[in-house]
Image 1 (cartoon, rainbow, N blue to C red):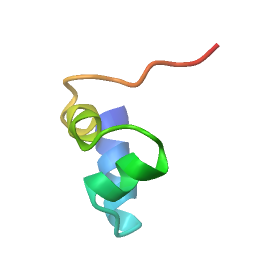
Image 2 (cartoon, rainbow, N blue to C red):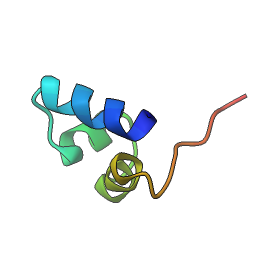
Image 3 (cartoon, one colour):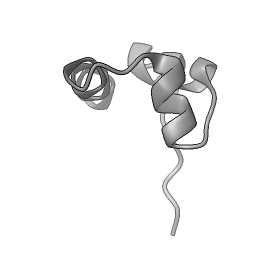
Amino acid sequence: MFSDKLKELRQKNNLTQEQLAKKINTTRKNISAYETGRSAPMHRT
């Protein structure tokens, strides 16, 4: 599942939610929502 993989990779790379959010130009709140499965990022087409 995306949420599990995101959290696993973030932790493996020793990043906080805030650090990851800054790297991908989003908010910590969005990262939290992605990791808990409450939301998913939109795909660009």
